[in-house]
Amino acid sequence: MNNHNWTLDDIPDLIGKTIVVTGANTGLGFEAVKAFAQNGANVVMACRSVEKGEIARKQIIRLYPSSYIKVMELDLGDLKSIRRFAVTFRQSHAHLDVLLNNAALMMAPYSQTKDGFESQMGINHLGHFALTGILLDLLKKTSGSRVVNVSSLSHKQGEIDFDNLLFENGKDFSSMKAYGRSKLSNLLFTYELQRFFESKGINSMAVAAHPGIANTGKPTKADTKLWLKIYNNLFASIIQPATMGALPEIRASVDPAVKPGEYYGPGGVLELAGYPVLVRPKFTALDVEMAHKLWEVSEKLTSIKYH
View (cartoon, one colour):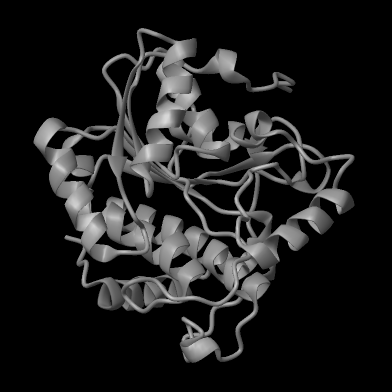
């Protein structure tokens, strides 16, 4: 039995690899960028705020002066912004080795994206669905490329309701319900994307990860600050720093041993904390029919067709 704990020391040489990280200026994304840059990758920090992204980039450059990191604007709550990002990215990049779909809106009050989607579903799932689809040509061109979707333990409370997928006009909405739905959607998307790759003979893989209970610093809205305080108090004894919480998604992104369709999370009790290992999602996440229907609905909502 292999008792080895996978750490940053296990990251292979990433020289020549191009990696895009969404939500890269804070929390898990920031830690992932650091790890990739330290090991020689060309990293693109896809951030809603270029200003905040540049501040984060400079912090990493101070640690690793020879690293290549570029900040690009990406608002996952705006399909036009996603398209602009793709156009700009292609101007300077001919391939894409890893697309790490890390960004997430967490436990936010009801609001809508610029395209009229409930914000957590819109950003966490539909935004990343659209981004992946728009960059699919580069992923297909890059042999062995990966798409890594970051889910959450909250996917276990998630339910998909196709009659009211986006909580129209706030109907039946709660911040936790919407977040859980978006995180379940991340997994359904991952498995359907892997089936898509296989059916088309594409040499790419879809992988998922979750951070357990980690201090990601994500909630920023006024009424989520109280939730975060309660959350931190409840899990004070086990909450992981972002450096540990990021390990599953980092491993999913670069470990040569990773296989298509795998899901990584902390290896401790209840997957709350610990070093990254293979984990299993709840049964609903493996529902092929549900995943296929979500894919079709997502294509229709985003007007992004996968080929």
